[in-house]
Length: 348
Image 1 (tube, rainbow, N blue to C red):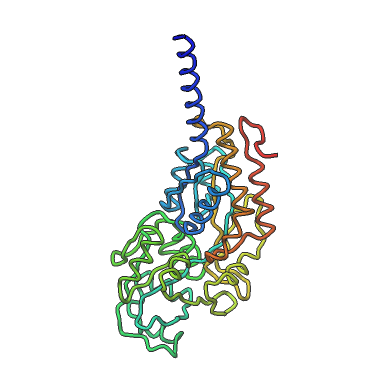
Image 2: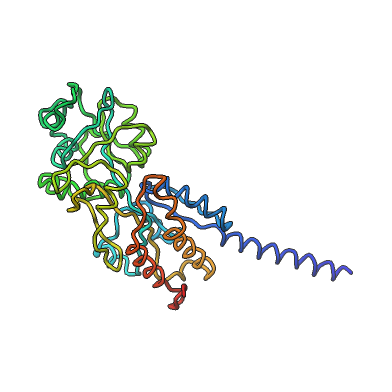
């Protein structure tokens, strides 16, 4: 009888262990960009309701997300700045990019009456480089003749962390301002002036701008809109002042996407396209057998990403993110199908 009870108890222990392993495989870990965080929060909540799979995503910035993926401590990373060829060669193991949505980097500010301003790329660059220091500067006033701009000092708020939003912003400014390109350049972590105030994540920048009169910052547009903050219309390559709307972002994305999906769409040539638009990506290793990952865990990760580029797209517009085009979805599907486990395809 004792032996029978012993075997029964052992069975319960084994069943419990299997349940623990199964439960562990039902929770996925991600980290990275705060740019798409409001959308990802909604997507992952709905995915959990539909599938029972929990997704723990930490919005630590694109730079942090890339580091976490390369350290192999998360299932996937989020980034608004794709890994360039030099970085991919440095990593050696193949990294894949899956676009998940489109977004706009908005220039937001804190001025009396919250006027809607029109700004050009060169003026934005000079403000953030500290060359324009007062709101009633003639260059700003000439673009906004009907607005009574105050003689108020401009306080620049920028990201303090390694940020894909910053990369999008600086990528755009490098295209429209020679001074910015040579002095600051494209970077997730540019060398800002000593007077700029740093804040972590999009939410941190939005919070600082909202609390500091006379301040200006750059954030993914939902962070400004959800806080009731004004956003500037920015002059595009066609000479039109375009607000950061879904329509403007969608038009900016109307471009050929390469097979690996890595593309920049800032400073668009689209007549009514918003010039500071971008895709954001989820990144992961092509070979999914690493660090003790099981095939089931790899399959769970790919199932999530497949859902995000298909069913999950229905949540994009309500949160002010652009949906992927049919072409982008097709390219993303091909990238996902290239994933492997022990060199063999995971998805059929």
